Each structure stands twice: as C-alpha cells, then as structure tokens.
Length: 118
Image (cartoon, rainbow, N blue to C red; front, side, top):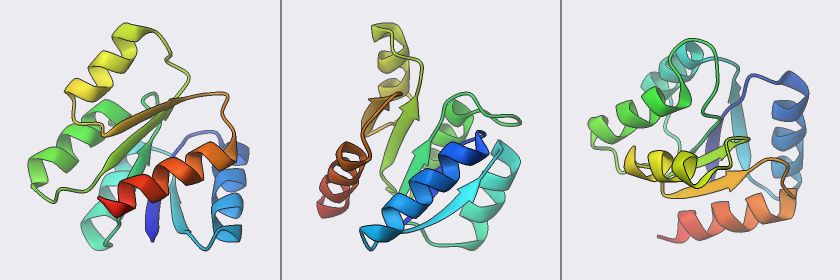
C-alpha cells in the first residue's frame, strides 16, 4: 500500500511516515496543497491522508480534486477539526473516513488497511 500524507506539521508528518513504514505501508509527504496536487499528478497512491488546514489549496480542495478526477482513491481526513459540522463537511467533500487529532498510530493503520480492502 502507498499513501500520500498531506500534513503541514513536519514532525507529525515524519512521525506518521516512519510509523507507517514499520507497518509496511509506504508513504510520501506533502507539506502544502500545491505539493500534494503535484504528487497526485505524477504518482499512483492507494489512499490520500489529508489534513484539512494546509497552506495553498486546502485539504478540502484537494479532496474535491481527487473526487473530480474519478480515480476512486479513498480519502481519509486526519485533522484537528473535530466538531460534527467539520466531519459532515469532510464527508460531503468526498472523505471515506475521518480521524481527529490527537490520534493513535495503530488506529490510523487499522483505518488505512480497512480502506485498502474496499
């Protein structure tokens, strides 16, 4: 499995990538929306993990772009925006799953594997 992590906090992004690597999940990191869209255009990913609040195009805009592409790529929103309205917006934009920060890496791994089985 190969995932794209869109997260603007470098330490968190690297910790997620390193933790996923230990679970045999390959991950690339984009620290902003422009980099995320570029990586999505040149690489094949199984799942996109999006923080909603990143510089450049937001995680919401990236989700819309993925849905519009027709790729069917699953989207997991990983964000501090934890109100019900935030979650509803994420799902309405095309997210397949929504995990709020702080989170346990094991839960993220379990959710990624579940999405990959679909």
